[in-house]
Image 1 (cartoon, rainbow, N blue to C red):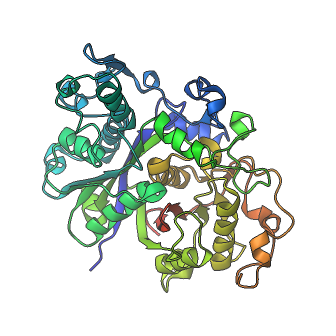
Image 2 (image 1 turned 120 degrees about the horizontal axis):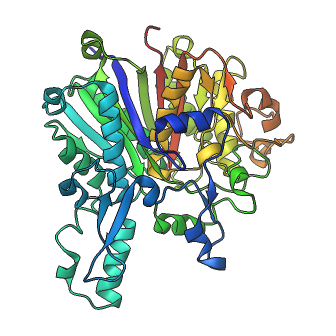
Image 3 (image 1 turned 90 degrees about the vertical axis):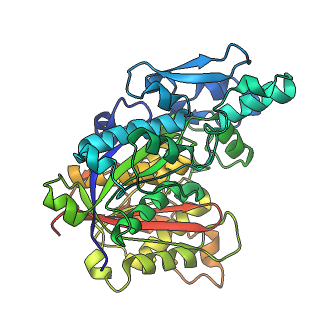
Length: 449
């Protein structure tokens, strides 16, 4: 028997926001969290893009304490607000600290007791797209370029850079005795970790899990995408992320964290928990196209079929939270696959990256948190900056093997609200995709449906 899974807590770190309350207020006021990044500007013409939804160390309530033996190496991050014990800070990079802070918020909201948190039935599943980059770069610069000894790096270089450092740090912080894992699937990481956690609970392997994704502010990640020439440029910050708009020319590389507390529904209900939402199903797949980067209409249609199964009418969403990165090909393929499967009536499309950019490994988790907020507030977050939609078919729609809609993007203007709108929202489908042709989808609904 597959168990129902409840969302009982949410938390995270969000650009220009002191907490999740301010994040919610700004999102549903239609504001952008994207700004010029001073660190990118410092590199002048070496960088094509200079905008980001970033969070600085100071804005995180932290202070970087430099090593006395190495050049520009962060020995530890000091928590100026005394939220994280020092013994947990020494093993963490910036993204890991954000994951721990989001975990504290999600657990506080969940109402879990200490015995429940420490139980063998409580797990941690958190990942990132990349991470530990700044710690690694400064380590290698000191060793290779400045000829410093390895022992000057101290005892925590490895644990601050290892692949699953985010889950490990959270697990050590809360001292759970269940699973501690991470899944890395590029820009589908955040949703993929939540989906995997859902399955662990649904199939009875754990009763409760802290899950999500985090991506610490990192110039290294930014540089890599800038080199690929896939980042937005030429627009003012608040208008630089433009899903579905004719002038979209790339995504905005951003950073943040989204953490959720998941629990078996029957257990949450029995203890009188405040159930924020219920996960109805999760499905993921690969395109099978052999292409590392290009989206696949066929793969995304299979994703929808896998998520909905034979329950399309029962699981039909009021909102589709799209991946919507502002890339020319990706946005069009995604919109057409949604319309092909659902038709063009009865729902709206939300494109959160239009407001805060693409948070890479954290994207799906932060956007899932936003989906829960949409259910709570009964408001659809907008497709900001989708001002001018192409009234002509895309070039690929004219190819002989295209078997989807022949209508242009402009035909679906009514699905793409440019400002937040109020409506009855009972169910949301969240979509995220990643390099390597990986696709993830989750259906989440209000309790009591």
